[in-house]
Image (cartoon, rainbow, N blue to C red; front, top):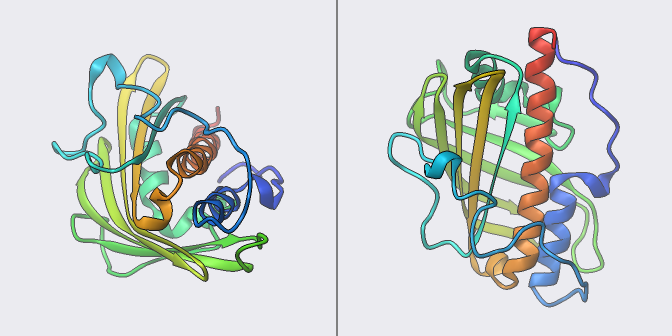
Amino acid sequence: MSAPRPHRSPSGTRLAALALSLAAAAGTLAVTAAPARAASGPVHAGHHGEAVECRGQGTDPDALVRYGTEVLIEAPPSTVFKAQTDVEQWPSWQDAVLTSERLDRGPLRTGSAFRWTTPVPATPATPTTTLTVTSTVQQVQRDHCIRWTGPATGEGIHIDEGTHVWTFTKVKGGTLVRTEETWTGDQAEADVDLSTGALGEGLEIWLQDLKTAAEARTGC
C-alpha cells in the first residue's frame, strides 16, 4: 500500500512547468527562468561514467533538450521496477498523472504501449488542457531497465518525440535509480533552456514520488 501522497499545488506539477516553458518557447509569453540544469547535457555523465542505457540503447543522441538524474531508493530493485512498470497504477502515487491505461495485455514487454494523461493549467498563451502521452516500450529487462518513446499532445502543446530511459541497480542500501529523458520537436526546441528546466523539474518530482511509493511498499 502506498503512503499518502503529499498535497502539491498545480504550479508544482511536471506539466505546469511544461506548459509555461512551451508557451514561452513559442514566443507568446515573456518569462525569465533559469533551467534546472545546463541544457548541454544530463545532470550526471553517468554512475562511474556509465551511460544511461537499456540493452545498449539510450536517449536520442541528437536531441537538444535532455536531462538526467538519479536517486537512491531504500528498496530492492524488484520492488522499484514493479512500481515503475505497473503503469496502470501510476495515478495512485503520482499526483501529476490523471489516468494511465495499457494498450495491450500481459507483462510489459518490448512493443507494449500505454497511454497516460496529465493536467496542464492555463497560461497567458495556452488554455487549460490535458496532455495525452502515448508511450511504446522499446527495450526492457526485468528488474534492471526500461526504455520507452512516444509523442505528447494537448491543446496548444506538442512534443514530437520523448525518449525516456530508466535503470535500476542494486547497491548498498537499496536501489540506485538513474533516468535520462530527451525531447525533440520545434516547439520544445524553440527555447532549449526553458524546456530543459521544465523537463528537469518533472523528472525530479517523478523520482521523489517513486522513492516514496517504493519505500512505502517495503515499510521504510
